Length: 206
Image: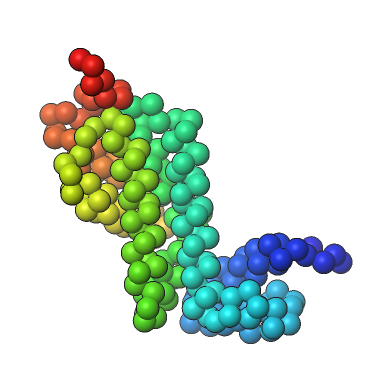
């Protein structure tokens, strides 16, 4: 990118890439707007113009990760999810792969935000947004009791993230993590005797 002026969007992306690299190499404690500006080769006012505060920078990083997870899951659902079992596999695969792609910095950014007062709603909204995506995808194939869907999906997401962390720490293989997370999801939305049976969209005309 050197030698030409970046658009505002390109500059923001560059700063976020730089911030993520710092988190990956050194953790979130050293992350400041001044450090990001220095590493990106821009003046401090440029970084402050985009994010205003360190919290603003961490928030932008979190939202980027959240968007990547949502886009990956949506794209896979559109092309691969034609049954309940496939939907469970696609959703868990997309989540695990996104966490693996981002690596430990996802947890680092989340932990850093968790320690800042006033960010609880941001983290909750991110989890609930992804849970809503799960609900919309799964309810094409199986009805969920009113009021239970969101708690179920939040639990599934928590379990899937924990399994992805095990893969990052080399205590579990990716394929095994996806398989276990898929089983957890199927178990959450169907009875044991129903798993693998209701694998096509619901036909209410029968």
